[in-house]
Amino acid sequence: MLVRIRPGAQLTGAERELVECLRDYPSTGLALVDCQVGDRRLGAVIVTPRGITVLEVRGFRRRQSGLLTVAADGSWKISDSPLDLEDESTNALTDQVEHGVHAVRVALEQALQEGKHVCGAVILVPYRGVVVRPARTTLRPGLDVLVANTVDAHELRVYLEGFSAAPREWTVDRVINTCTALGVGEVPSRAELAEEGFAANRPAPTPVAPQVRPVRKVSAPPPPVDPSRRGKLVGVAVFVAALIGVFVVFLVVGMALLQESPKTRPMSDTSQTTSTTRAPVLGPSTTSAPVTPRKTACWPFQTDC
Image (cartoon, rainbow, N blue to C red):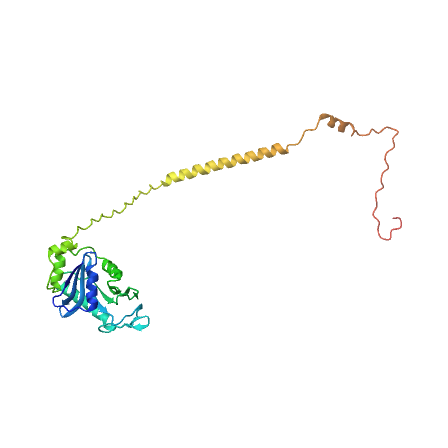
């Protein structure tokens, strides 16, 4: 990374450690260390092809290692011990970073440049050999806390690679205009920026193929059925059903007649019955059958009854 330090700047030990980390950073970028924007002094302003980030750098007064926690009330601790930094208390660090981000945005907007892709971070530089975890903590969107030194600068490099998701729009001309807007005294040349990796022109926008909506095929509704034709069809169906019903009735009656017809008796049985039922002939010697006397009605108190 290309590093520019403001002439006459008096850097702290933590800032000198950060300069060594940035010079060893392999990706494209420009670091403006001890940058003066208006009446505000900023630790560093880093310009990458994707955006700008404002850094505030703080070192430790003594060797502190352990777990870094950032509470909602603004108190920062390492393993339940207050953070012992070189300069001011941690309560003012968040506000100072936010004010620096705002100052950079205002300076860019006054120079008729876009200032929305500007983020901020606090860089804590521990003593070499001291381990502080986690090495990155997000305070809020666009504001982070990083732990880095020349021994362990992994999280700082990850942050610089992905702090902004903007397209690669910072070209050589735009970087020079940004340095002019921020009041940088020693502006890098075009050759230095091109050698660093900044593009000469903005990349052509990727053509977006128009989304073709599928055409819905609307079929025409079927023609309405003629009422007279519908009536004819209904009449034919009723007539056919009636014929089928009549045929079924005749079929059932015929089967019943065939199953229940009486059997014919032979002639011999008829002759025998006739011969055996002849009436007897009365001869002259035959007496007549006795006559049954008729009953007479009897009256009360009748003696001969």
